[in-house]
Length: 357
Image 1 (cartoon, rainbow, N blue to C red):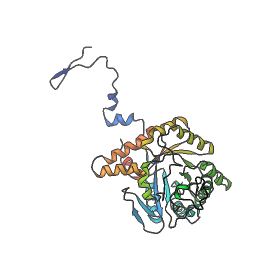
Image 2: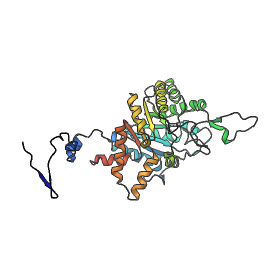
Image 3: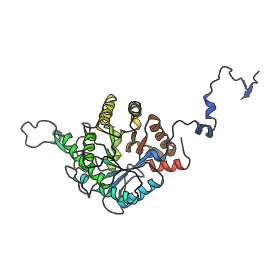
Image 4: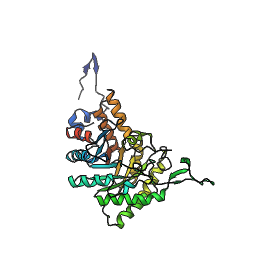
């Protein structure tokens, strides 16, 4: 059949008879785009982090993270209820104690800030899924993720200096197990160890199982990089190291094969889920783990990623809603099943109102 030329802007155009594949046919309108969309983000995919502090009626905004605040338990309960009503996957709790000490005693105390937070939230919202970040950086007076010990011989000196100190891996494993057990006894639904200690999953699994908490799953921060993207979090969690950094236990950002090794070890130790942290700069790692492991996979959309979006939106340089949903979609497309994000509440509202990329 002969084709009739179409005149556009004074030019006669003819369809190319050899151009039979036209992907644009499936992009012509919103209905067809929704129909063929390969990756969907839902509120149930999202976990909202909460920072809990002692006291009552406290809401301390985090300057570097607009919209995020340190909250007393009564105020955190209001946000937890909003997360439940918007059908988020759950929340994850971080505690900032009133008193810090060298071994982070509050983290494993039955009356610690997180333990009280867990009990209060679960009593009011028993169906809300509550995770507890399990690390010591918020609880120690030195800001590191466990008990400190000499990292090298003191060569006759009586007292170590800061340069001599590092986190004692095996001493820290014992108190990680104690903290996890105290969270389980408070009623937490999931333990999420984030300190990158060798053997942390096995130590926590053993501590839980020995006391009968065999049903409590472990979401391991299996692949956590020593990242510059954590800056705002350290303000929110009051966890900046008093000296040095965390590069002796968190991973080198340049390493990919090491991520596979870390995830393999955590699987063997009994992890129920794996996590990659940070997210945006590590989507290749998310995909690598998705291709290699069958366990559910989470990614942490960290504080620096959140702060950059907020700052650019405040300057009018980006459309915040679209960028947030595009980032979350990227995490899902890379292979994540769950996304921990400070955008979770806002994103859930957008999704429930028909928003999308």
